[in-house]
Length: 356
Ligand code: PMP
Image (cartoon, rainbow, N blue to C red):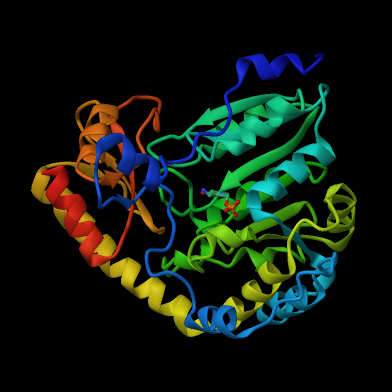
């Protein structure tokens, strides 16, 4: 079959090993997954209440415009519904953006290491890409600017960055946006936005009126604890959103997902609770790393990157045998790093014990 040639060089996306598979493979009855940055506190109790009580209208197509969810998000964020596009997770939005803008003649830029879907989608569309190594764990804006070509169409910025977990300095990021030619789309992937606590952090929504070439991506998969409903959203200029909506499948989210996301947005209390508990537990990882003499990256997210000082793949396998799934692999270009989702107090105790 005449598939795109590039597919021969690519692998399907490999998420963290599922709990059931791990149980079977290692003969375990109890396994915790700290590999995919999900929220260990679940989701808003109001969502659970709705799920128990509501008869859902499964026979009807969902609202292709996600009207109610957009209104709720628009009100919360002080923007217009026309500035929003709703995706089947932000993964789908990354794909929609790439499909809308890339082909063999185009070029994209991103840091490395960062979220791998930016490169993955560039490859599928046949575009070329330049990965700019992090410098001392931070985005190297000078190098980004140097690497811009005449055909550069998208710059992907993951903030906070996955897998390092650090948040970018707002003033430096805005200065960079200012320098980038306005016909290049800058995507600010803020999947972990709700966890950010840095006091000097500026909400990028404030930049929207000034820069028509930025698109902000946020998701319900992380702090809202709703990874399975597959809802992410993009916020940008209405003319940009209109173009991306042409590429989006009309019924890309189902009615339950729309409703659940809306209920979750309205439950600020749950979000704040998750943020607080996550921050408390994150401190325990710093203490643990110090005790163990390990280097750990300061994180503004619900995961931490740990320098393991030995092959992290082997270590991850040992942890798996003890019922703890984490993410290893070539996270910083070497096999010596492990990314661990910050779990509940009990889950983290289990991780610390197993690690020791
Ligand atoms: N961007 C980043 C930086 C992520 O870490 C993730 C999830 N791992 C995503 C996007 C995708 O999130 P989702 O599709 O669940 O919204």
